[in-house]
Picture 1 (cartoon, rainbow, N blue to C red):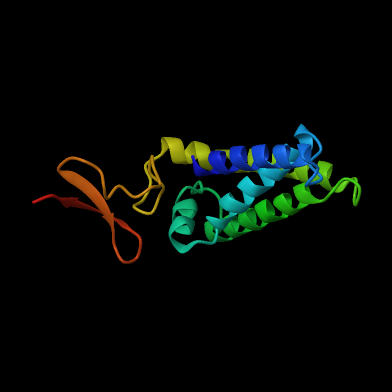
Picture 2: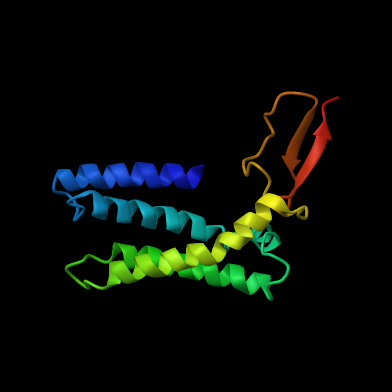
Length: 157
């Protein structure tokens, strides 16, 4: 949910600031590019954050070799796509269309990992339905994070 919120808020802020003449986002395409770049900057961080990285490695389909390297590579490609989307059309007119095309290919290539994550049983480091801590959850069973960021079920006593 956080990537969607970042995308939406950043796109609206870019659109409003462009309307006011404060940025080069003169219209919706530029504002969408800024919003998408912000979302990619956020999501690419998960590829390098230790706890989230383990979850991403866990959803790489087992038939693919070197899952840790693939997670690093896709994180780097997301950063490059974000930078490419931010290049003003007046500077390099080919940068944004190229970044958009490469990003579309990247998302298509990463789709099997998302299907695998949604359909297969995964290890303890895999992302669950929610990636937010549930320490304040009501009821007798709650989860808490250990000192290494792993989830641990605890019972209220």
